[in-house]
Image 1 (cartoon, rainbow, N blue to C red):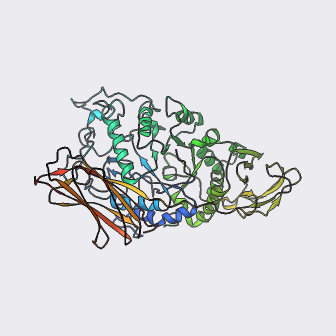
Image 2: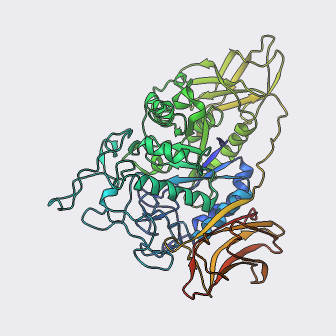
Image 3: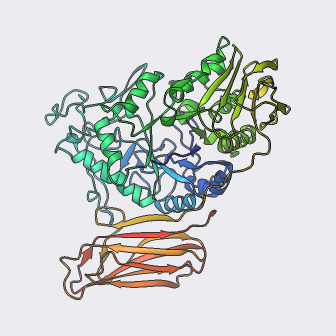
Length: 608
């Protein structure tokens, strides 16, 4: 299972229920681009900064369509990623399927992994008395022909408002292995997010679990995703989550769960226990977040409590550490106070030099309007460089006081980190033991303090600056360390499936169907294969697959007979930009239609 080195949460909220800026806002004051294009424009810069994986917001159509509240967590259709006219719009809040496909290709071209945000707990936007009837548009626009329809037997029983409908199904019991036991998040009071999917106990048996796994597989293939963020795992059966992550298309991929709890033991047990996730999934380090929150606000906070703090201290390989996320930053009902901008550098200094996988928050990194990158980006760039090039191995505490914590990462070239919480006074700390040899020159890679030399015992005296604007930290290692290899650009492999119940139509007799546009670099190899079921084809039936360039000129073409399923075709692009795949069937019957899967591999440009 591949583990990212630095994860970027590539979205934020502008209020409790207000998503990122979007052209779908008629009064957008900044003439904002579509979010998928905005991330694509910044992909190369993210890779240079040290980001190795990008966590996207939920990509499926939300109940709110593209309105301000369309964060994506109120999922409506599992097979609509900005390609069907539903909930008042074709595009999602973030853009269209084509823009999302292009973003995925650009991320891979920059060597960045794609982490999809999966909301598996509930669905929103259904009809009926209790909102549990879900029907979707198909590829030709019919309102009820879409894949994976749902009804009341797909959801846990929850008594609606009186009077109780005659067709209410109280037999849909809670699933096994749900951490909350009731499928609802409890923070102060019970919260009902929406009709609660019955992953295991739904009727008919296996319908929901099989349907959800198939939908995630489709999404993974469509975008060439490398990992998943699992929303609100406290309300989802671990039996289902294990089945999801162990199925062939997800096996070996990175996964991290949002288990919102400050109890390290509880979260770690969910990760490691065979009753729960059996080490198949990481978790966000909420216990460490609450510790960093206390460091920011509690005048009596003891810096010694940072020693092996949080989930990262107990299980670093499965801990995803963070300073802020979309909920902690915007939801005062969940977190009454957040970490202030001038306190964030010290918190980031800890997670970017400590064990665990650090997650950087987009709003802290970006210099776009309303973000904090103007203040924090130079600081984050320095700390991300230190993380990528120096911070390795287990942690050894070296000095602990109320306002000071010094620790050493003992792998690689070693890294000695000193943190000072005192905003007024610098702190001198003498006789700090290190793992460096005697008389070893040391350089502070933050630029906050002068270089040092260890004494005859390998000890040092540190001077850690006051925590003015959060800059009370130093990071020492041997001088002259340089940049490690940058991520290598990758081809993207995306699968486009034509079927009457999806969002791309079947191949049809006598009609050219536009399958997809792919965003290619000049001179890149394009490989494709076409799968279809031809056992009922009449003699003489064929399908022709054509690729045209941005000027509409034919690049390559192949005609498939009934025995050619899976055959490949290779070509090389001559120009940069969108290339169009189209398919046409020729058959004796004028009403002939055929489903297909087009797998295409290519290299995108690194920028738009």
